[in-house]
Length: 349
Image (cartoon, rainbow, N blue to C red):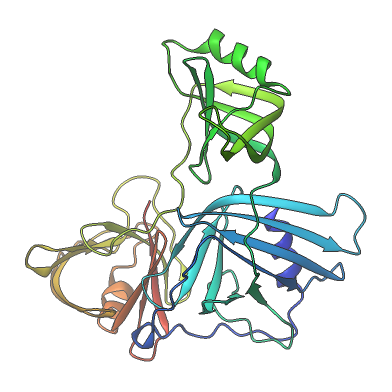
């Protein structure tokens, strides 16, 4: 899967450096004419190279294929999930079935460049670019485990894959009968969605409505079905009216409490109010926002004595006075100083 790709790639650095993202100088680069496939051979520490194809769909889904050149079988992997663009800085964010976030810089409409796991440029003599191909690939992926919400209704099965949200018709082949029967025994009402796991082949098949080919699930092997829901898949959230949980401050991870108040911030649209906490005391203030520029002004804070683990009140207050720009990469917000250096990282939890 994609984690194998990144483990190989990140071991192959000749030299790397986590350069800052200068959000204030970002110029958006569009990705027109989707779907589009970007292809190239990425470095690999234990093989001759990783032939990689990533296809971006206009509906915000992606699929990828990797071929590990010079490795014995099985030397191929596939992935499926969602993609979003950062608010600034031309960063493409993907999240596939293994839930790891991956980052690419959109250098032009025809070229993307893989970044490191912190969404920073990889400074190396090796090639990390993928280039647009003349035609886009069609979905043809064998995936296991493939988990999604399955329902059988009106003599037809549907499967909503968890990582991508793709709503796929289920083809009557392979272990389809086992999947259907297990569902009918467990469901409590017609049309109820249950969480199913299969070894599946996603590829075009003729639709029930006519001769049109549509991406469909071929259930090669049934594994399990139970009550449950998919975790939330990747999405791009807004800066304001959203509580942001602090996860990194001045380059250090923040220990989040198991109970009680978590450190974080919320920017309220009404009157440009700022509220938050460093894990103990409540912070109040205002903010000024103009595109990627943001300035935070604190005017009040409670003064309780706090000894609990994860309390970062003082350091957070000092850091917020240095903030001049922001960026959102999916469900992650980053705050930078006037030179574009990362000061703090927050996530939607």
